[in-house]
Length: 218
Image (tube, rainbow, N blue to C red; front, side, top):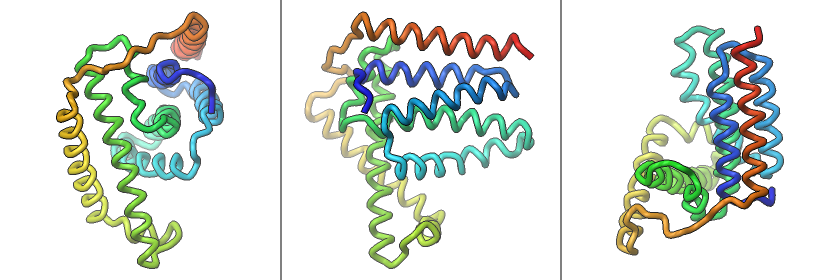
């Protein structure tokens, strides 16, 4: 795994996502550059491919339902750009050590309320992934092995059950955090070193150059 601090890994991931999200519509060449950066970032982080591809597939199904009514040309660009953003952030989230999302959030210059929301979202994602793995094991025990069997098992009712179960677990986790003294403040202190700030500045400069070039060049 890449030897970078958690706050720096989060900020680099956000630089890639924000830069790709601000690209000009139909700037395919610049989007291809961001896609290459996202793939390199995934390789450097050594994200687990089975979990990553499964998570991306589920997310793209929901995004397709939203984007396809906009027309094929516009939807194709939006889906590819969304794929780049999801690939970057999912690679970061899947390679986080357990319960370390709060450490990564501490260095972000955002309001504490937003940090709290992001922290709880990260906890919910861990719970959701755990529930998916439980449902997959249950499907295998019932003889539904392989991708086709899992698709038959994951019907609309199962997806609804998945979110209900994960929400219930999320409520229990939050209640346990409150009992242990959680008040919305993150009790960690993590600052970037001078070298890490230089790396972040270089990444911001590259992302800004690509995004601005997509709006200037035709």
